[in-house]
Amino acid sequence: MKFKFSIVMAVYNASQWINEAIDSVINQTIGFENIELILVDDGSIDSSKEICKQYKNEYPNNIKYYYRITRSHFFNIF
Image (cartoon, rainbow, N blue to C red; front, top):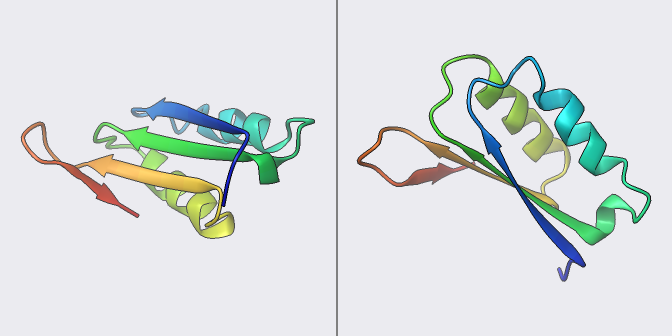
């Protein structure tokens, strides 16, 4: 799929704000079908990971989610 915009959102222990941030991107007037959202989680230990995975499952064509396990390992892709 070709998107008009790709947005990279850094995530780290952001469970308090992540829903609002992601919903803001989803609700842009350009239409979410035109947006690719890339969530990059630097090893959150709160519920950010679960929240991001829920959005990824709901919008599998638009959202990519990367989670970093440790500082020395690459990201897992969900």
